[in-house]
Image (tube, rainbow, N blue to C red):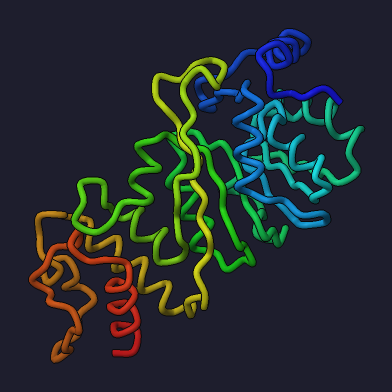
Length: 270
């Protein structure tokens, strides 16, 4: 089957189905096969492996994963794109399944995917990543194409300008790395920004549910007001007489992910 990731093929499909990229869905289709090769290499799909793809669009990455004989479940909200996938890919691959709907409202966790991938729209990148991190599923790695500024935030270290709540949340659960940068001309239509492919490899062991719940509370409160100290931001969680293993006169951006994990474990036990 002809590769979807090319300028000619993408335009052919859009014309065939009388479609255009929808800004409301943040659609920018990858038209560079080298980019798909880089993303596929980062995913490292294995035969019969369960892979979940968020927002497949016209199916350029989907096709590459299916060609590796992985079992791909594609979650797509845009019914126009669903029609393309059902017509162009589904009849050719027995290892494909489509879930129609908003990822955040689907039963995606029941798929049991070991790898989750996707070209994520900017406006919903953080909610999607936090949804995945918050649920206990058997994912081993995540590979996302995001705006470069978001990628830099994900991999940022403590006390750096890009360090934020998202940095801590991701790094507590996995090891993130930027594996590729994708210029605007790799997409149609061209976005106004450079994109990046981020791979997040899961850390082990997994957090206990109560500790993880406490961790999310701590992260949210700690970064709610960056100018305040932890002592002020975490006041709702601190019991009288509790002795902190961390100097609470520090600000959130000065703590690395290990220190946030330590705080969450200590506050869960006390």
